Image: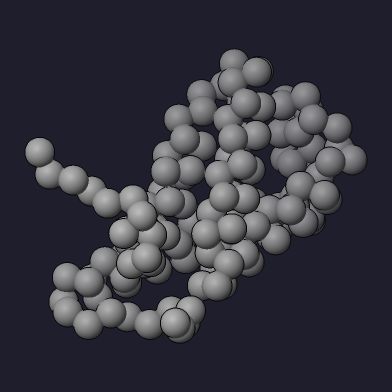
Length: 134
């Protein structure tokens, strides 16, 4: 069984595959930018960390973890592990924002999109999590 990311045959399957990759790349760019901001730092990042009640010493480790999760997510052989890791990362973000009284719907949507993108691009996942019609 091959684990390479190949577009499936058939127009509908190919459209799902490429839609999933487009969403995944956009999400990865978002996570990548977030990680880069953490790694580079700056006054806005410091203010954000202070607002969330996070120590500045967590900035670099969080950026590294975020980048590692994205790499796992983009590699087809480790994409499911990456989705699990990104979901956990977003769960922490949801809890952190909720704790300080911020809206957290954006983090929920991003977590759902992580799995939607993977579901669209990975036919084996669609067989494990099928959509059913009533």
